[in-house]
Length: 298
Image 1 (cartoon, rainbow, N blue to C red):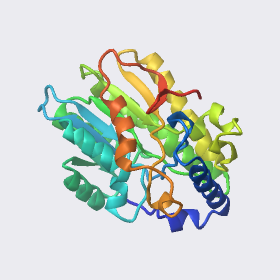
Image 2 (image 1 turned 45 degrees about the horizontal axis):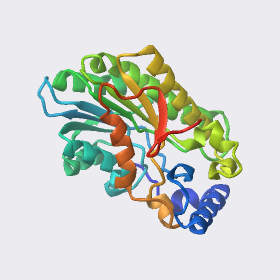
Image 3 (image 1 turned 180 degrees about the vertical axis):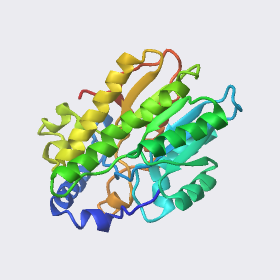
Image 4 (image 1 turned 30 degrees about the vertical axis):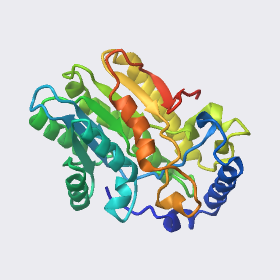
């Protein structure tokens, strides 16, 4: 939980993105909240290559264990606590033991302490870091009940090879790394759930619809990598029938990046959508892409 994702630092340096977000502000003001939830597009602050895990309080036994990636880049722990922190907090309140993963050890430990969670160092772009994080959870808990893929980067700027590699390595390949390392622990759970925090910016339905804000979003690498993230979720759902895999569009969230433009709802509200899929029962759906209203086309 670290990095820098202030509105000035990101939006101010990317004029096309600033125009898009400004357009979103005008769009939100124009509809004045009258649109159905499914027609709303929610901006999320992308983040560094980190993660978090959660497990309920049954030592090596009956409590759920969850893991989620840190999506928010910020200079302060409070900002990183916005959505990933709200999700962690809600899982802790539900009785989960939550492991917060981040590349920055000091900030990650502070965030975990504030949230009543546990810390494990994690960089989703590094195989050794992922293996070490899951080995730590295995030794302490013996299983994993919930895995939330929450890591992500924007991939804005010049769409060159290095930028593309970084975007896909974090937003898509990181899902493969963490999932493959977590599968043995997930299989030990009686009700394993995996949630990918994706985006409607990666939806063919949304980006080809002139009435959707995503239609004019100039973030090719972010959108493409989120399409890959959703497809990976579906393919894992097909290949792992004993584990539920679902992708989520968590909804517009007020963060440092969107605060200056007056768009977005509270992190607590967005986190509820993630948590709903994280605690699905044994008869819950798998292989879906959802927001708070239900399944979305993509």
